Image (tube, rainbow, N blue to C red; front, side):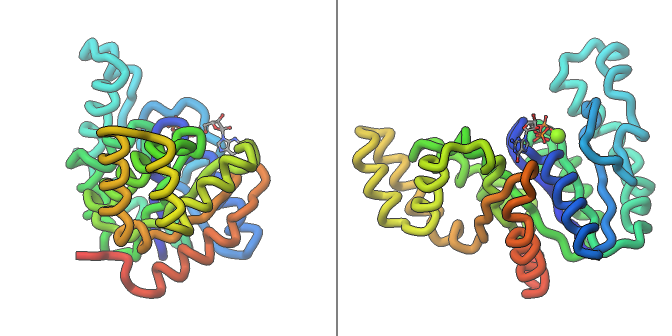
Length: 253
Ligand SMILES: Nc1nc2c(ncn2[C@@H]2O[C@H](COP(=O)(O)OP(=O)(O)OP(=O)(O)O)[C@@H](O)[C@H]2O)c(=O)[nH]1
Ligand SMILES: [Mg+2]
């Protein structure tokens, strides 16, 4: 068994990619199961074999404790994690090649709070990887791109699992934006030149320093462009997943 966690900012395409990658794996004769860890999900583009919504009722949490949507989400995950042993045994008992885990829209809830880390820790015996979704709409300027890279690195540092960056929704991103992002990924020099010409003052200095620091770390993340609508890039994504996991570096200490 292998586990892939789909992590990314709200609306970056996590649930869609979970569904699309599951579909791609099935088409390529791999057995796969999906897991939903988002208690607030109403409609999902896949039918999860394991579902956090069976452990907690998000709407009831909101009403019972008079909580806003985000506080209710935190409380719901906390409530579900009380049954972490059952939840994780359900996952471990799935007898499949790949388990795809869709995480909540509020990235920090899974990546930076103890509940999310507890789940990752409980499943650590299984070779696991993070597929970090970089939303091109939120990464099309040098400063946004640096921020996205920074966030992907923060998730990697927090969860301590090898990561792949998946640039999502490439079927709807203007080609020139995609070309620009690809250029920044492949050439640190091009990225720095653009940072210096497109921003100025403190913003320029901070952006340049951030990408400089992240350069070495970022190079260890394979970057794959994908579309969950057309399935473009999914073969490359799968190649990156299997390579990363077979290298045995899925857990970096
Ligand atoms: N055209 C296109 N739309 C996409 C793609 N991936 C996701 N979307 C759309 O983007 C929106 C958000 O996608 P989701 O998969 O729900 O994103 P998410 O990250 O799971 O969202 P939250 O869980 O709410 O944070 C939906 O309207 C999807 O149909 C893609 O590859 N191409
Ligand atoms: Mg989702």
